[in-house]
Length: 392
Ligand code: ACO
Image 1: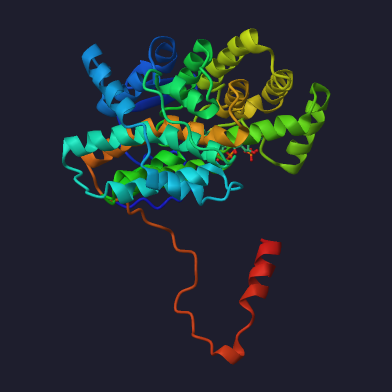
Image 2: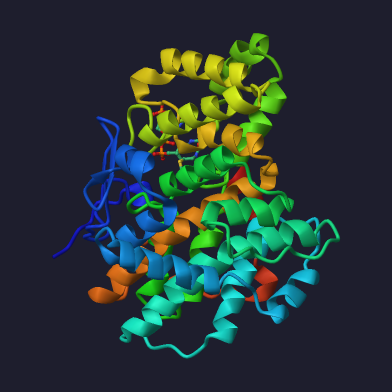
């Protein structure tokens, strides 16, 4: 079979077959293993949903208890990982720290047995358990403090908030944070998941798979958009400035952060749930000064760009929720990574089930049979590149 049409960003080209999640972008529907995400957000927890994504079905009470127990048991970090983190510059981005730590796990658990279910289970548990601890530890260490040990009496979300703040988490805050994790856990073949699958297809170890996905999630067009949204709201500063800000973006053709999606042509269903969660938090802990700006932006962008299918995506309201939970802005994307580790692991496992290494083709656009020019006759490559950059 030959397929010669080039589609930038592989838009619309199926890269795999998957039974993990389903998106209907025209009607704003997201399902994990066939269950609507709104229903899961209402009734499930992040760990139960992770189990569903990775093993394909909701666990029995006994299976869930065992899974949660294993995760609690593996939350601690090896002291060598903590020592390694002490050497990281405090000015470095926490996503870079997380990527390095995820990859470093591979040094400690290097025996690779991808056809052994016990190995798969141990890797799933270790990654889900340790990634939140890494994020919280980096946050404390960059401020010059010792990391806080996980607390076994707290659930997944509550323990993360505790490790970050050393304060007993408020039950509503912990439940809302857990729902945020659940909502970010999986989203079909997005850039970071594709990256995870390509890496998985080489049969490398799962720590390398997750490290490559973390690196991909970090970019501002993907997971990094949630912190960019807050910078944008800060820059706008007041509801009165919204129209002028949007005028400038549209004139200069710059993307408005937190809006637009390759698949959704209506408001992302996760954005609607996150907005409700933000409102619940505002009711209990006070309204965020940026919320009115966000509402004004949503209304204006929908009026101006709705005809192109540009509406709020998952990143638009998540930052406002995280701010209210006291999470620093540059941890928003690492928090996304904590959640999406579940989806990446589900795709890793699915990829191993029917693996073939990814090796797409390309359409070559360069010269052929070019002569070798001797050094004294060459023109400066830098000058030519500069001309190409300026004119192209
Ligand atoms: N602001 C203004 N215009 C937009 C935006 C936006 N945020 N997003 C898309 N458009 C416009 C484009 O200018 C383009 O218009 P045109 O057809 O007149 O040229 C049209 O919509 C299609 O846009 P593309 O960039 O081709 O859409 P693509 O599917 O490649 O990109 C993406 C999707 C990257 C999410 C884009 O909408 C974007 O950059 N959004 C802002 C960043 C963001 O919020 N990213 C998070 C996405 S969700 C996630 O990854 C978890």
